[in-house]
Amino acid sequence: MNAKDLLSLSPVLPVVVLHDAEQAVPVAHALRDGGVRVMELTLRTDAALEAIRRVASEVPDVVVGAGTVISPDQAKQAADAGAAFLVTPGATDTLLDAAVETRLPLLPGASTVSEAMRLAERGFDTLKFFPAEASGGPAALSAIGGPLPQLRFCPTGGITPTNAPRYLALPNVGCVGGTWLTPADALAARDYARIETLAREASALTAEART
Ligand code: 3PG
Image (cartoon, rainbow, N blue to C red):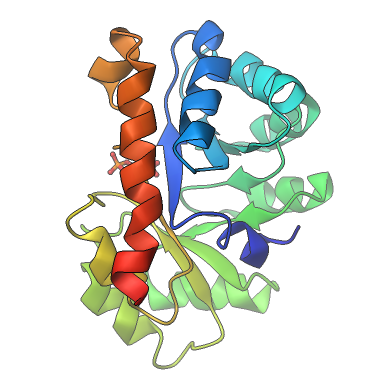
């Protein structure tokens, strides 16, 4: 799988923040049962690497990646834990070098034309547009597509079920990313049925936006 294929797995890439690795498998099952077979576990908590390890080994029908990768060490640790892809909120040369070393598909973050051009120069054609809403939203991303039509994006940051269709309608958007499928209150209550419902609604966003 390359980074472009990653964007075709689901209209929404769930960005998941887990504080308890025990929740990793039930959350992966809930997303899958709602039709979403991909998840990004963010390395913002101590539980994240163990959570990736569990989903990678116990839920083979969900593609699990690591998000919020901001250091070379994290790129390596995520790969060792079994992550199938890496997502970074921005990009530095040392981080990119370490990510390339893992040979995993990478979605490097960019929010400006120059950042996107630098990444394209290094051979990356599939990027995370972050923070999407704060960086100008669909209008900005559409404008970036003018000079850089070869690039595909996963906009993330401030995306909701309401504004997602506006991004999904853009030709340079493959999917959107967001935390709304796994809200903190649902996780705290271990309300996996709610996560499944949110995933089901998110899977339907493609059809709404693209038909
Ligand atoms: C990310 O790292 O992608 C963002 O934190 C997503 O956050 P949001 O969907 O809650 O805006």
